[in-house]
Length: 467
Image 1 (tube, rainbow, N blue to C red):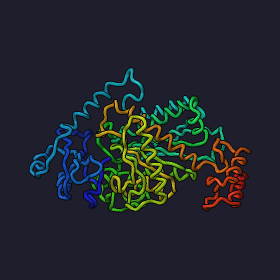
Image 2 (tube, rainbow, N blue to C red):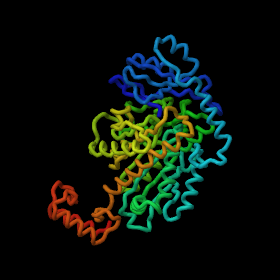
Image 3 (cartoon, helix red, strand yellow):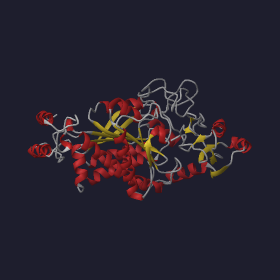
C-alpha cells in the first residue's frame, strides 16, 4: 500500500506520483528500491522531490525506510547527501521473472500455488459455488467503471435458522490493484470454509447461522491493468480529465471524505480521493451491499504489505467510540495470526499506528453503519511476492477471519438464542432464567447496566418477535 505518513511528529506527504506511462506497457528497467535513513522532515522532503515511491509504511526518525526511485534521479539522491543502501537492484527483473513464470502456466500445480488473474478468480468462485450447492452462491454486486462485474462469494446455509435474524460478515480484498496477495488470501478463506463445513462443527455452526460475503477483487479494472500494463498500478482506471488516471477507492468512502489529511485533491496523486464521496462505482457497489445488511456485524479489508492489524479512526488520532472493543478484538486477531507461523503483526488504530487515511473503508463502516471494521496488511516486503508466500500468508490469516466472524455471530446473533446453540427454543428460556436468577451480567439483555425485570421483558419480546 503506497502511503502517506505522520513523519517525525508532523504530517508528511499525502501521496506521490507514480512513474506511469500512457503506452500499452509500463516498465521499471533500472528502477531501484533504496533503504534510506530519514532523520528529519527535510530528508523526507528530499525523497518527495525525487518522486520516490514510498514503500515504507511509516516514517520514524532514524529508522530506515524503503523507496522505489527511477534511474534518472539516482545522481540527485547521491548528491543529496542522504545515506542509503540498495535493497532491490532492478525492480523490472522481479516483474519479468513473475511474468515468465505465469506465462509458463501452472500445469501440475494446485490452485493456490501461484497468483491468479481476474478470470481465473471468477472461474474458481463459480467452481466453489457449483461444488457446494446450498452453501455458496456467486453474487454480482454490480459493474465497475469499465463494466466488469464486481463479484462476491456468499457463504451461508439459508436452510437453517432464520436468515433475517442472522448477522452478516464482509471480507473484501484488492481495493488497491497491485496487492495481488490479498485476493489469494480471500479465496483461500472461501475454499477452506466450504471444505471444512462437513467435518468441523464450529465452522458448520458459523455457516449455518452467519452470512459471509467474500469479495476477492474490489477493484477489477485496476487489477486487470496490473496484469496487462503496469504491475505497480494502485488505483482504479478513472480518466480524471487532467491527463491523470485513477482514483484511490480507499479514499473515496463517504465518511470524513475530503480531508487533506490522508487523501489528496489532485488526480496525479496515488491517494486521489475523487470528485465526491462515492464518486466511483467500485465503492458504490460495496457500500450498497453493506447498507442492505442491517445486521452487518463485522468487516475486514485485506491489503498488503507490512503486517498490521488496523482499526478506526484513520482520519483523526482521536479514539473511536468502543475503542476498548476494537483493541481487544484487534489484538486477538493479531494473536490468531501469530499462532500459526509465529508472525508478529502490529495492532493499533490506523491514524496513530500507521498513517492518516481520510475517506477510507474502515471509517465508513464504523462511522456510518456501526459495523466493527479492520484492515489487515498482509506479510511481505514487496507487492511482487514469491508464489511460495501465498500459502503461509493464507494459512495465518484464515483463523483470524474465522475468529472475527464467530465474534460477529456471538455479539450480533439473535438475542433469543441465549445459550448460543444456533436455535431459539425452550432451552434458551431456561438458560436465561438461570442467568437472571444468578444475576449473570450476560442477563442484562436491554443493556442498561443492571439485571432486572426489564430484561425479562426484553428477552420475552425478542423471543416472541422471532425477528
